[in-house]
Image (cartoon, rainbow, N blue to C red; front, side, top):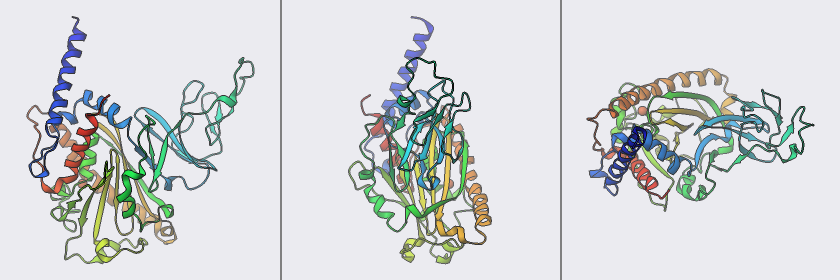
Length: 394
Ligand SMILES: [Fe+2]
């Protein structure tokens, strides 16, 4: 047996052992539950399997319709090594590969508004529906039919304004799996939202770490001791149970401390969502749409996030801060968004700092599965989701 085969067999053995360890935690009640094994956050082999069994098969959030207000608006995103773009055409929104059909250069970058996606390499041009419209000097290419050339479209579904894609093409429709969450968003007019500001972070840690930290407030006591804990103490938070069959989402509630006045949630002066009771205004909600979409709602804003896994220990984190369209009428709107972006970055950096430390610790040979607090229900729910998806047949 050559050295490569021996190494591969040893690594396969490691992966089999890790998968067995992951499944050993299945069916635990939260009161006795542990985290997934640390190696589930560091193993590249485990990450490759997550790509096949989770990310290629599930609905992945790539953006929000607030980014595509008018026909011709587009944004680009790279996910699982696929350069994609979402485009609002005159008829509908499409998500397409943006790799040129000629010699593969991406035909768009960043975001903007256009009528034609013109490849910077040889100027092949594509319409908003992906149809090839321009192909210079191809008249002597025998049998070449530009009309038969279209950028491949990726299956997409829009739920609550979020644009989700499914690479395998056979995931069951997402909306029925988000039924209860859709009901909770009844007071928010999704078509009325605009992007106040956006932020991106290059995170040196596993995608599950990014999700878990968004979805629990237990860590306010440490990472956000001076910023969030004073008005939103983690010990008051609770995770909701799951009630629907194959429920595609979970939720954590985080109320204001009892003696903080309700005016606190209106301090930005942004127009609030209508029809909320005072109690609803005092309780923020954090939603996780499995596997990568994180949404926080408050009285006047939606903090929309997607997590793009790059490798076992690298994750790209994109946040859009969504507010009501009429917020733009505020005389100090731009200044306010800049201030909120600066403040939001402070909190996000507090998370990135502890999560970076956590990933370093996860590589330790002494890092074992740790016990969970009752405040970490979404962490337990994610672990169960990962166990269930990873156990599905190839
Ligand atoms: Fe945090």
